[in-house]
Structures are given as structure tokens and as C-alpha cells.
Length: 337
Image 1: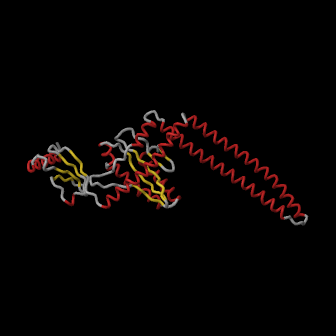
Image 2: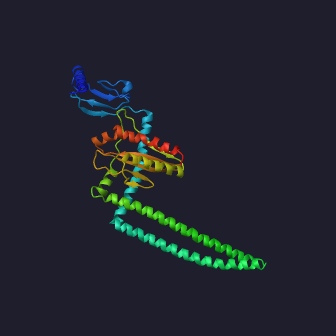
């Protein structure tokens, strides 16, 4: 038995001897803002803000009492609840997309075939548009030659011919714009399918896969509380698209630093670390919540709703992840580039 444990048991034994064991008195343990541990049968008024444990005569924890909440703590708690509700809405949408993906495709090969089919169709559209553009260029060349011949002979080019040439040039430019739009669509479809294929692989992993992932998405968020009852709200606001895109890239970099592994979800609304295998692991999720004047990037942790999960989400390591998110992203926003 360590000196500290011996001291603790001796103090509790003293408290029991003085105040009895009839249930009229209790021993409480709490940690103050300086990290000092206190034991007493009474909690001083200036200490009621701290979370505390109620102990029996054997120093066993029989109950946990939250500290008294200040107005600021209540506001922070309400904000966290609201952000979590909005995050859950985004996660439900992701769940629906996941289920649709699994119902639509049964293998990675089917996804690749579907992608190739879409790309082939767009390539055909480009081919037809390019042919139309070429025909228009040939007609334009004839009309431009007519105008040039007239100018060589010192004759005026009629308004009708000038208008025809101008119209043809616009049509050629419109065909070029259409080809660029189709090429951009090809790129977007390829990127979207790449994400779908990566997501499909994650959900079909041999150890857990979709069922394990959905279990974790649906698990409750354990409230992040230290012994002082403080709650960390990891949220960053951004005002315009460029700023929000930059913040999103910073959020991605932050998660990759925490996990040192590829993200299991990486799209324009959700960033998520790999699905944990047990209740001693946690999941980090960042969601991009839309607002009228911009976005809020909200980081939260998923821990199992159990004593182990609660301890994990309140641990110093997890709290450091929560607390480090906002300054990391904001520092990236302040940097040039």
C-alpha cells in the first residue's frame, strides 16, 4: 500500500469514526482547479463547482456528483448539445448514403464498371461536341475568307456577313465552353467515385466493416468532463467559401496528425478517423455545419457509453485533442497561402 493510499484510508476511517456510519454523513473526494485532491465530509461553498465522488468507509466510489454550474458552463453545455444535434443530422445523412452505396453496388468491380460507363458516355458527348465545333470552324473559315476577299478588293463587308461571322465565332466558343464543362464533370465524377470506392472498402473490411462502423456512428457522445466539470467546445467559425475551405484543410491535417492513418470518411461535410475496435479506443469526427453567414467546423469524440468510455472521453489525452483543435485551425487560417 502506498503512502498516499494509506493516508486516504486513514482519513476516511477518521471521518467515519467521528461522524458515524449511519448514513447521515458522507466522505467526498474532489480535485480543485490547481489539481489538489481533497477529502471531506463537507464541501465548502467555494468548492461546490467541482465534480466530486462520494466514498464509502472502504474508500470505494459509490456515487459521482456534478459540480454546481455557472451561467457560462450552462451556455457552453447548451451550445455543445446544439452542435451535436446538427452533427448527428449530418451523420444520419452519411448513414443513408452508406446504405444506398451498399445496396447499389455489391463489389468494387461493379463500382469501377459504373464509373467507366459514365466516363465513356461523357467522352462520347465530348466527341460529338468536338465534331460539331469542327464543322462550325470550317463554315466560319469560308465566311472569313469571303470577308477577306472583299476587303482585298476594297469593297465593304456587309453587316449581314459580319453578323454571320460573329455568330459563328460565338458558337465555336460555346462548343469549347461545353467541352470544358464536360471535362470538369468527368473530373468531379472520378473524384466522387474514388471516394465511394474508398468508402466501400472501409465498410467491407473483414474485421467489422459496415456493421461495426454504423454501431459507432449511432453510439452516444459521452460528455467530456474533467473533475472540475469543465466542458470543451471544439468549434471554429468561418465566414466565406475560401476561408472555410482553408479551415477544412486545416481540420483534415489536424486529424491526420492525431491518427497517423488514412481517414475512413473524407468528404465535404465529414472528416472521420478510423472506426475503433473496442471501447478503449475513440473516434474523432469533424463536421462542416452550414450557417447563413458561413460554416462552423465542429470536432467531437465518440466513446462508448460505458464507464470505460466515459473515463476515456474525460482523460487528459482526449481533452488535449479537443482543446488543440480550435487553435490549430485558427493558426492555419492566420498563416499566408
